[in-house]
Length: 158
Ligand SMILES: [Zn+2]
Image 1 (spheres, rainbow, N blue to C red):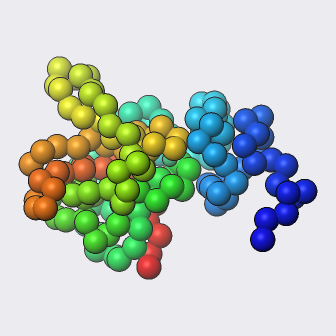
Image 2 (cartoon, helix red, strand yellow):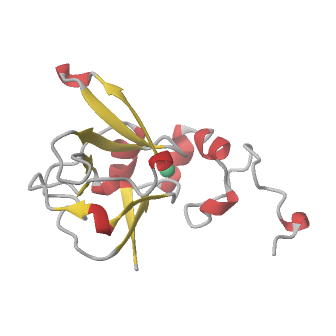
């Protein structure tokens, strides 16, 4: 299927022409090398503030907090598949909540001590987008609550 002669931009960090619609054309290094200006050009102001600057959308205002459409939630920045609607649950918080990522390797977690709280931040493992936080008060079987921002996600309906 792949023709090497038509594949000269893959993995080239200098290439800025890729878009969210062609995530397969870009590797991790490419996405992580994007500058703030490049992100601003491809994201909405809300997406940029939340996904690239670790912002938080107001509860009950995001586009997916109450969504029950079956499908796959992808990273709004790079298109990587992150969560399945099968693991989405109604947390009552006003943010889309999941009890498990699609694959453990799809997300990266690290300690976040901002605002005087100790929380675990969740990022997209491919592009580093801020997705939200994970808490340990979720439902079975994992007991986890991935509390995400709608602005960092893009639902691909099944
Ligand atoms: Zn991403």
